[in-house]
Image (cartoon, rainbow, N blue to C red; front, side):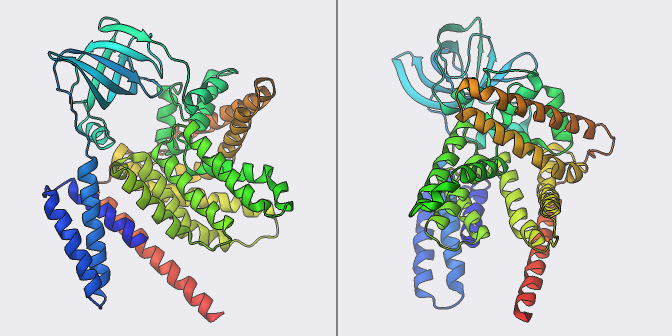
Length: 475
């Protein structure tokens, strides 16, 4: 699966730089497939990898976003707010969809994913609006972010204000994420702490202030606010513990594993189903199915299979920053942290847990630091120390938040209150950690240096595995 996923990803990258007719690509796939069947040497693997890379190229080309409505032409359009609006300096941004637009020959149905700039307080997530506006191609004044939005499937941007807003159809919360935000919003103590809980449990960061966002970014802890594998691991563990009595029933462990899978996907959609969440949910599903069938599984192989399936579903995930950080963190944990944790020897379970958390935090930070530096021009040095300290707090916040979502309002209040208090402690730690001048060094790694660092990580991984294999043979 490592060869398959890397080959497919290579095809997606090549498609971003070179233009080749699809008929030539599919001809190459057929030719490489035939050669893989005919050749009896080690070249068979090369031809298989080539065929998969060509399929990745074709998938990237076919899924490339393109607008069916004209750019820069004033017209009436029906716009739906699909994402939770996030505050910016004087306006809000949200994901939206243009469902129809009016031209000289009448109305046309479309399905355009757009970036909405909202300068009207009349719109919220789920609302459908009739707007007199235009679709513009450029979505950000920063060229890099504009390219990132294109790769995520956005075709352009639409501005909405009180002057071009004709009518609004306010909708009640319909998605699981909207309902989760509403349930958490029934109790609100400290607003910043509540916003942190909302971000970590429901995937909505609309209440996070610019100051707090900057503190998390400077310390390299932004991944804690974004729902990812860490949060789903807490959910899986909590649900598994709650359903432990099912193991006493005949074949109850199978029902338990199935219910854990259901809970994981419910939480994934309740938190917004971001690429990192889908990656984690898919991988945990593979693991639970292996437990269900009493089969052994390889963690790295399961991760690579997950990456391949998600890239087949949406090739542009390869360029999504949250997806990149999530994958790199998990790869680092699997290939470095797991062997280190296995080598920890202590009679105290508390010491083992603390040392394991520290190892996982340090490894995850080291594996994501190059990408963070490349995108944000910041080396979060203090994150290596602070991340292990915040992992237990984050687990408590997510666990309490999930329990609060599952319980009715009167019973959920104390759990949300406790989650907000823990979030207050976490925010204070992050703010204090961001104050030293050396917390984050302003430095940007270029593409060559990033590639060199991960090549070094790969070499270290091969050496570590070789040493482990020699120890096993010696024993």
